[in-house]
Length: 144
Image (cartoon, rainbow, N blue to C red; front, side, top):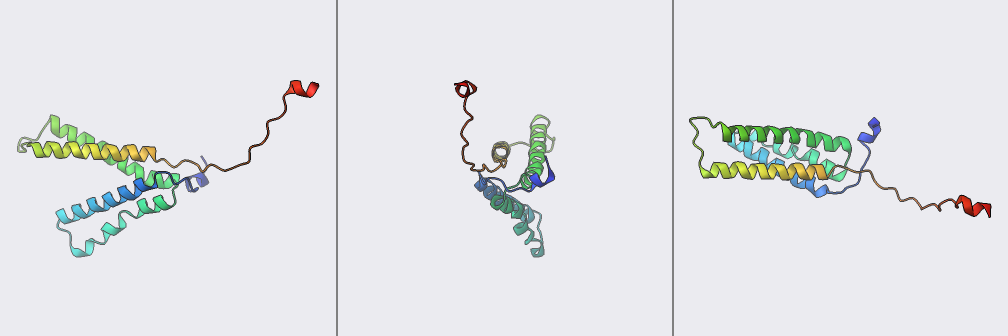
């Protein structure tokens, strides 16, 4: 694959997936900052987080898809590993109640849906509308 093909504009199929994921990422970043007690000067970063998603929705490229998808794939794989480890080998001071198990299950379902949408939304090349060319006459027809 040539480097120019990485930034070549592609079809805008499933553009809405990136808008939704960008919004969810901004909500998650805001929730994380609020949970950590972030100072008001740190809150503008929440607006910066979804920008790559919105840019890719407007101008899809293979490079943009990779920049967005690769970190999400790694995050999902690590989340699966962590949740499975916690369910199999729980830490002794932590007692699992039903709400935590339900929360982990919902997280896995949502992350799996995000990965499936990202895989399905891989940017395909634009189809060029070329006039159909007539097929060459058959060799048998030319002899007569």
